[in-house]
Amino acid sequence: MSRPRTALGVFVPAGLSDVADEARMLGDLSRSGAALFEIGAPAADPVLDGPVIASAYRQALRRGTDLARLQQTIERAAALAPTVVVAYWASLQQHGPSRFAARLAAAGACAVMVPDLPADQAVAWRQATGSVGLLAPALIPRQMPKEKLGAVAAAASGWLYAPASTGPTGYRGPLDTPALAQEVERLRATSTLPIVSGIGVSTPAKAAAVAPLVDAVIIGTPIVRALTTTPHNTPSMVAQFAAAVAARQVHHG
Image 1 (cartoon, rainbow, N blue to C red):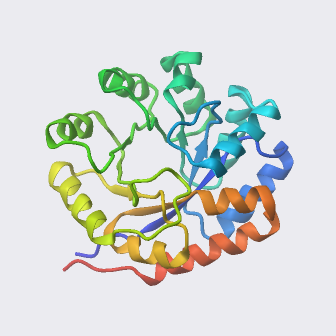
Image 2 (cartoon, one colour):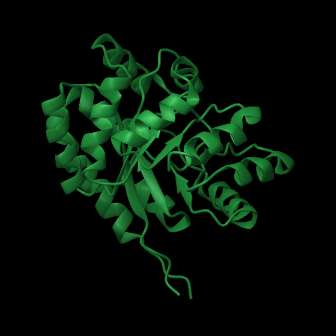
Image 3 (cartoon, rainbow, N blue to C red):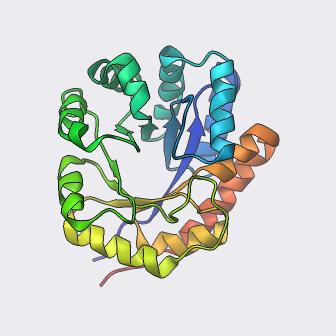
């Protein structure tokens, strides 16, 4: 049986530009090959992110991006493609996890991933998301011990996120593809959930190397860098990544 084609996801911080410009940009990215969107909820202390995304978050916060503005971004993205929100635990604490989940669901999000979700909050968070029809995918650091992995995977829904590198977002060095392949095998032996990868997928060639291993590849920092420096180049960049991912589809007999 063939495995479904690997999807390309594109990460976009909410509130980098005004609503009209943002809507046009999301439409351009969708037409260029983004099959799903990850919308970043701007955070003052994005501890797992590198300087490019951290700077973009600061820019969005200076523009006054709040929960209502985040909802506007989600609404426009979700009208184009399945949309997952990436939010730090501090945002959930600020608004209240149940209220935060309800607002994002109302805006049309299909999932929320909290990369720094405390282990003792995972079950309660899955209940909060499940009650409003949201999925709760989990980010799985490569060094996560086996005894913890089972509990985290069991509390997750939608998919598991396996970082392609062990560095922060924006890592541009070489990828240890065999190590990622081993990690994906470990996750597939633990859970039946699809596997998504990103972080360190800084070029189309790296996306092509990762694509056969997983169910979706997420592109973040290269897109954010373009959005904040040469936004007119962003759609063509997405098209290059989409072509690279599409060229490396594999079939499982």
